Length: 102
Length: 490
Image 1: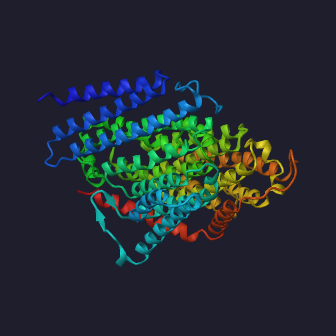
Image 2: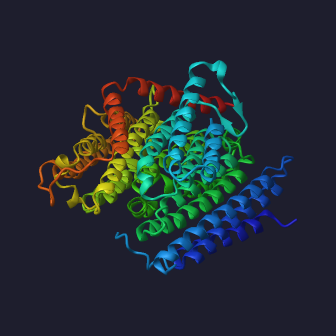
Image 3: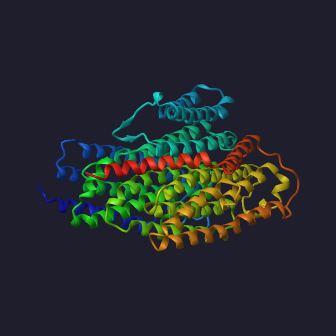
């Protein structure tokens, strides 16, 4: 079995990629992908920690099944919101969406 | 009670397919309102006579007074929003989907106030958040609404991702997803795992903070509240934010004292930044929804004061009582203010502050209730906002005998409160003293003014007679703290 540290490192890298994507990209669909990467980093964590803790119960696995379903729901809602915004603005670049002045 | 809400939400969707054109517009709103009121009644009955109590405790829920308190707060706000939406939603259309989403959010918030397991927290969190993204973009041909929705969705989804990552780290540290079990595990945490604990704490603050509108994570709030339909903005600022505070209390107050960290000082810094930035930014706004959004950020700062000083309480947990009390008062006041904005937006096209000039003559009931709500938000004495702020700041003064920054926190809070009266009073002055651009009495929307009068009555009555809510908050806080100290020795 790989040591836990490797999994932590991998999920940390995935998390960082997600955060990097969120701060550097402007396309709303890409931002949605970045969020999905963050969620998958957490999923990887849950499975690795569950294995490491060696629990008899399947809490970690159950958690991941729930999160996959939640992430799917989130992607569905997100894409529909992005589509409805695209219909009005003809644009999915979040920097160009600036009707609301800050 | 979540059964009632879920059943009603599904019933509305079925009813839409069955009903005719006319009843389709208003009936879903009445069903939603009835379901929410029935749930409030059910919660109260289970509290008054324990014989009717449905479940003592369940692995993923904790049936305690904190949950009851917050679920009643969020349901009262949801009821106000649902009642106001009956008339408001006629202008948008698609009332069935609107009310079904509103009920799903309400279910999520109620589940979140009772959740005692990390799995339940994340599921309820998403159930609360996902419908609000859609509600924010509900005026789907309006550029502002869709823009607000995209911005809110991206940051909201990111906050869930961060929260999930933080929960996975908590799972590693605690070896369990149950908060009560986690507390015992955290006490014997190996010191070399402390960096992971700090990382988990920072990510938890970021994840919860986005919904709680704590300052470094507040960027989406003004855009979302301005672009969303005002009734939805009322729901976002008064209900979902309170539910986020409920779960933050459960996670932070119960588990953090066992970590060897200076976490309360971090919360104090966040509180100062949140209330100062919120109030300063609110002063310069030209749109009322945007001003209310910044004032809502500032009010979250006041609530954070209570969270920061809660570990230094002496006999009664004043800080925590203040958090609960202010959650209730701020929920009702902010909902009333946004519903007044909804009423005005039905009659006037523009919603910048100039269009509110002379509103006292043109829409007297709306203007008067908005005045009450704004005065309450500013903390003027006979209204309920004064008492909850009094509890929060006196808790900070009391904490000043233990930590040096306690007194300063109270001073900054009171200064901020006085400062905020400036921009609230400015709106009131515009409504009553300034000359309107165009004169003539406007017909006030009856459905909305009824809700506004009800909300104003709640503000005044709980202001004149705040004891029952204070006692309820005190019992709830005591129950939470005794539960967490009972878990401590072992």
